[in-house]
Image (cartoon, rainbow, N blue to C red; front, side, top):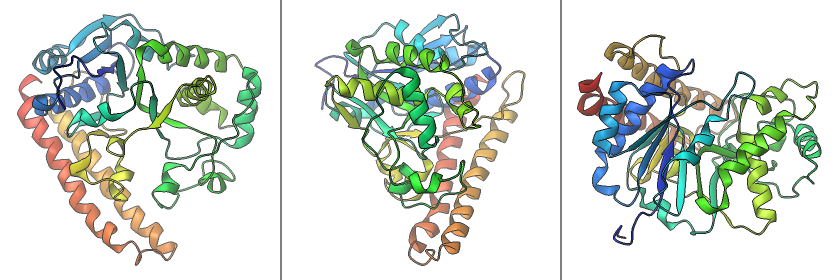
Length: 352
């Protein structure tokens, strides 16, 4: 494929440099940009945009310039009550392509982004969420509150597709929904044509959900703190209107669970969603020591996930069946850790 036909896809991320997690966003932005620089020969045709909430720190400005990213600065949209509105600032970038992919900042470009170009031009695309997240009665309450008939479609959770054991039930009966849950998608990577106005409708749906009477259920808090139920409803409404939907290719918005379960090999991963990386960055200026400490924490987190997977597989008497992937997991942890340290040494360390 060639980018001579013009921009293929706008890549948009919205870091928040004003909120309480600004140090996390700075660290995530640095590694996101570093991964983009590392793969720069493969990114023509994919204009990169940072729609920053507040002025970015000098470290991010330097790497953004090297990555060829267009940086814009905006006032926040999120409030203490509605914390997921800042993604709406993606609408304020100077779009160059007809479509976009909106990604979370804890994403790393590990390979060729051209997998995104193979998604049907008119389609919305996202990947199923790992877990059901909400019991069916809360979904029904949500749809009733919106005045919308609940969808009849059910999909398998990602954890069921990967044949991974559930760590623990977040609510009674969650395990029974793994194979058949109301559609719920991961919001860390969403592709859509700009003309559909998906981001605007996603935000409007989120606002409408916040106005629904809160049931007395502990999981309803997730509806208030996450934008993923609103994304699920928005995609469902678009599909009812006849717009196409495609699942993201396996190597796009790939999670550690996808890699561990060998649904996709690391050398086939294009966009890796390193969930929770740098989540515990301490307040104050981002330092080299702090970044290295968080890289070690993330490596340890992946090690623990691998060990827990072995323990759960043994408990279910499936360890022998899955011995190969369990034994190969440590090598994948080492590969990711080496890649992150390479990005740090080559690109991040010089600007921090």
